[in-house]
Image (cartoon, rainbow, N blue to C red; front, side, top):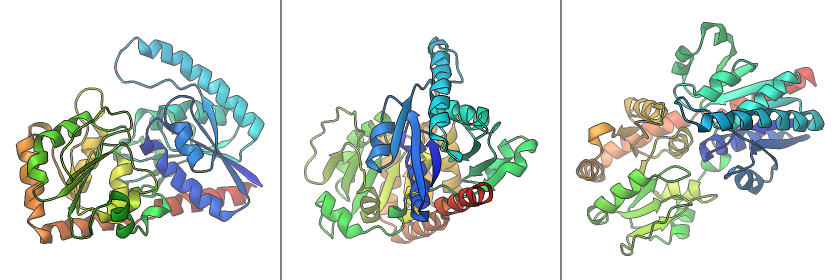
Length: 363
């Protein structure tokens, strides 16, 4: 039996795509998968709920701006390296697959120091800092977008494999009836699904509060507010707030007529796999490198979404955008078709095939 290590975490966008690849690998049989993630936060519960063994390590965040936290986090990164190295030496995996995020850097560097092959995946349109560090020791980098290669050094070109984003197999054949039954929404009700990423979004939550009276004239609004939100908006039967969707997410997406969302890579590719039209409000401004704006721009250019950024983000403009789509079935259908074309690529399968080839050649 071969042992395969996975790493990544910090948000659902760095965990769920990795779990999609793990699911495909498990179907090949005769392999044991274990995961190295942050010893704090959501990593452990999400990974273990998928039936995968989890090892927690210290994790320091990588920031592009100065803060005193960078100093203390350097020690966490160092501690994470030695903790990961100890685990990898003991468990002896044949390779390490990284799904990115700041927690992935120590395991990737530790694996390389032990001669373990490293493979990494970048979900966003442009690579993040963790990916740029991991790429130095990676044998291959999987990217979601062909255009991502332009952001990488020419010396890395031979490492690039365009795979799309891996999405859990449950999103391939979702059941809208299951989604409606879970939500307790009747078959004739039109659903606007609001997603604020795995941790929620205060900006989107406040926009919904301001626009809800108008939106609920046309839609039943299903709102994922975030697991740690203190949200307590009472707005009648045509509004439902949920902390977080888990296994039911594919079916809830399938039941939705339109999705209002952030543009984190994991979420928008899940929406695309189900073929949903989207209105995107990307995270932007200080504290972000602009990756969500780039993701949203790609989906908008492809015809799968409408992106609202900068001064376009207002309650008045949000109402105008959503209600114009509500009244235009032809536009929604065109967007849904464009969305489905993006989501048709089976990234998890393509990545699994590459990893299996590596295993068969070397083990």
